Length: 420
Image 1: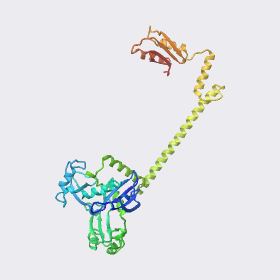
Image 2: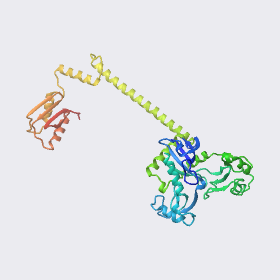
Image 3: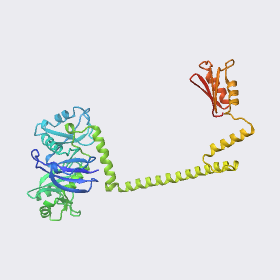
Image 4: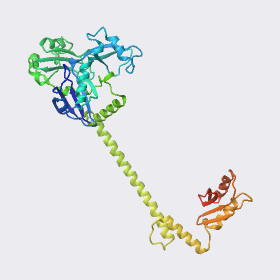
């Protein structure tokens, strides 16, 4: 399954010429294509694909709240609760902002809330939907917490005219710090030296700083050492792999769509992601072993069946040497036995006399049929009145003789059945 991961442009509402930086991936880890293009020219991820929108770090703010009891993630008035909790902390009117809770948010414990401009987000999503690229998931470029979702470390991103430093994942309760790129910012965040911000432990290697190609030279000049090149597409893919989804409240999709999307993403990740390669090999080996085992078992069963059929054919040809061609051994053997019985003047259970004798012994006393019809193996007795419980008793007596009876069109039909 292909995934189109794109950055939502900051600023005013996007127009027809607004370009989106994007990365197209099939495994969630490697970009098969990356570029920037207006919304109508973005690549199509396919019918089963997914479009993931990344909200830039500078378009988000982060708040820490404790949800009261009854205000869980599925509570109908959750947004009103968040507005009440955050009203004193926000500079803008809460009605103009969009809120999103962290994955797995629970009541009674501190949780992160992502906040961004509501009108800007709606306009960005509507522009993509109008261009035929509806967004299924919205993720933050960086998320709070140490080792949390998305990229973590020190990143220098932006343009040569406006570079800035992002320190992400620096502590369990730390939000991503965003500062204009400067030696002071590098020193303050700890990017210059190991340890905590401002530390000077000289027996440790300095932390790794990842920089976009456009700002790599400026970063290395301030660091005094090489920086690791890190593209926007790599950062977008790392953000898309996280569990965050800002598509909540009015931007949320229905539960069925979310379930199908998660199932498709999980299957695509398992099918293509490098970290699942060993599991894929193990699954392939198990399936191959099962197929080999089933084929071996089927071969043995076929051999056993062929041996039994050969035994039946051999019994037929040895008992009746005149049979030269075996087509259906049981039927041919039954025919030959009937022929021998007829030559000897004997009768079989399918003849009229044995069937009449069995029926006469089974019928209730004093009950005689007014008409008898016979075909080979079937006897019909008409004109007998039956009580509801009498047929069961007749059948029980007939079964002892190897016959069974049933009522059809008012007649008692006697046929040869399984012997007890």
